[in-house]
Image 1 (cartoon, rainbow, N blue to C red):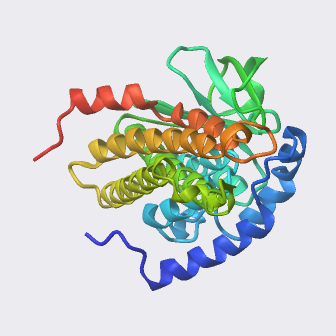
Image 2: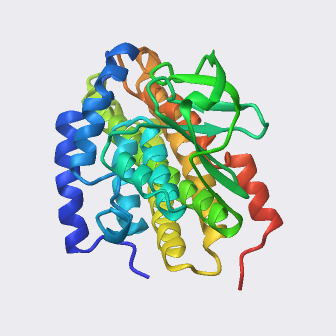
Amino acid sequence: MNLLPDAEQTQLLDAAVDFLRKEAPVSGGETPEAFRARMGRPFWSRLAGLGWIGLGLSEAQGGVGYTLAEEALFFREFGRHLLTPAIVGAVLGARLAAEAGASDLAAAIIGGEALVGVAFGEADERYLLEIEDADYVLDVRPDAAALFPAAAFTAAPARCLDDRLSMARGKASGAPSAKLTGPAAAALFDRGAVLCAAMLAGMAEATRDVAVDYAKTRRQFGVAIGSFQAVKHKCADMAVRCEAATSMAFYAALAVRDGLPSAAFDASAAKAFAAEAAIENASVSVQVHGGMGFTEQMTPQLYVKRARVIDQLFGDRRTRLAKLLAEPQPA
């Protein structure tokens, strides 16, 4: 199995990288209010115009016609640039609506006309991420998946670890606009894990790059701090975690795409390891930056908070590791 992108995928990815560098730069000095304004409806309209929300849906479903493999490549870049987790809600919400036969709803999400927040948590009262401006809320569990109108939730504001994201807590009342159950819901849950794993792998890579760049330019005792063993070894460990997390995320994407017997196992393994890699790399990047690393003006602290939030979606590390222990990999 070849985990490297082919020529067509590379061309697609290069265009995405160019767009994100210009339109979604990561800035430590940006206020939460400025971030939310930047990620508002005009930005979603541009993403929709590029075809990114329907990238992995077939043309018959109103999408572009690519697969989970291409989506994973894009989501790695979304993680690098700290796009709001609502991108997961939009991509999976459009798929849920299309598979449930709600073609008009799928078209509205793919076209950027309807924004989708994400529900998570184990209890009936769910945490609701990015629903402040959302029209719908995606609630995906291993045995059931639904897309509710945002107005169906009776919710109270809650504080999010990542203050650039809005969060609430509440319950839904009434019928969903679209739903899936059984194997279809389980497949969507694992698909969400793969996309989050790709985002987390991108975060791990971004914090590695930030740490290495800083270690090359920051000087102490007349030399770059990257020449010190205590720093260079940390950077090397970060690079190893990146390679493993990215490889596992891409392998899981191909396994889920192709319906391999090990697909659910691979999705859980990729999500658990990518979360660990992203959180650890972000934390180490803070340390490499020394006393400045945790300050709001620096970027490493942004990845620490965002990685911990993405870890909670579609099964956190503890949930995914428990699943791996309970369901051994098929032979």
